[in-house]
Length: 320
Image (cartoon, rainbow, N blue to C red; front, top):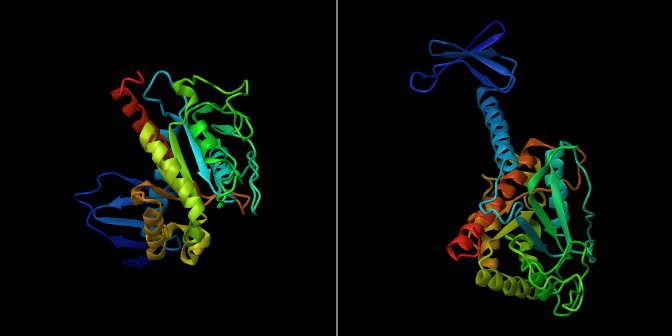
């Protein structure tokens, strides 16, 4: 590295890598032989490259999600159902995803904290590509929170299974009965859920109660029997790990969070690859690049899981 006037020069071997000018962030790197020149008061090339890659990754994720197309003609919008304990972040996740596409934090699905579930009804939430934009090709579904109790508090397991099988319409309030005129006796494939996501707080993994885990297990066994993919959303990662709270870019480098995710996988009996760490927009008023990317990566995984569901249905002759 050499400094001359207002410029710093870094010598690197580019002969096998680059043959053209590069534009990294808002900083133009000028190719001269085997050197890159940029103003010395700007960030290092490594932080600049990190910024460039991060923005590029977000753009690629947005493109994939915006132009997603279902693998079956009978379902235009895959349904993704979020299941979790009260206050785990189900409704906040929907608000956060919507905020990512709007470019600012919004509150559409009511979210909250404490011992009482905010979501009383089964809700289906479409997401729009910005204010006044087109409707994106998927639907996020929200239910009343599960309780860590052996009593009929919160939503019942059998009600969740009815939702998954497509018997329950939007705005239906639990408990669900077959005698209700709105109950779908013969739901279509589009009425059913195509991916189920268990939402768990990363900072309270060790406190998951046996009754809640038992309910999760019953639901997971049913999902396995009917061939619906299941994923896990680990929320509040910034509260689980002080290192990440100060710098969210360390989410994939934190040994502590890695141990937490591994612990969650063992408790729920799911592979680590099916767990997406996220931070919801619940305490801030502006969106950020790092949070957006984690949210979009999680959504990408959900849509790919829905595709796997459709592939399986085609093999079974249940979809075209």
